[in-house]
Image (cartoon, rainbow, N blue to C red):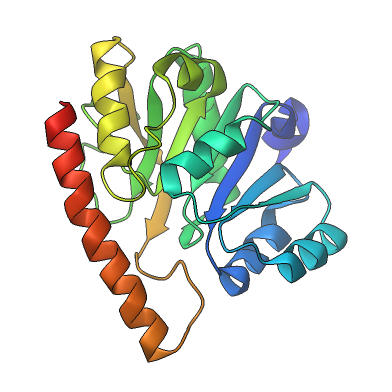
Length: 227
């Protein structure tokens, strides 16, 4: 905690969260982190009541309502409002402690901001723990730490990819531009997956699965045709 106080991490890092009907799992994140960081949420379900409630209750929280523009495009949109040198973009169901973000920030400083993107070590990943900073060819899209300047140089995410493989496309372009990607092994996060949205009816869940299947196939087609 003293590291945060001394270095005022909120002046360097913004937390970006892409949400779609994720109010219940977002509220604990806002409670835990809004004291230390500016938080930008892109709410792809246009939930006005959530925006009004959260911005009133929590300081340093900014919610932008959108029609469902997709994951990568929503991160691009959020980046327009980031005023810090770095930002950490996550799914709502990613869980991490403050020390995870501190260690990502330390690694970014050690790399002098010259990287395509950083991942915390996601719980299920099997990587070399002896290296604090490990270079990889691609990073996991559930939790990505960026330099705002380099994110824009790479061109952000391809808005034509609505869901799935958006980070793969980004990593291909980052590698081509010689911006390396890294796992930070002492920054630990947890992502079970599939819990980003609040519980809904069986019919709505079925419809959402159909949307995911469709975009999964479209993204594969588009990605391989592009590259």
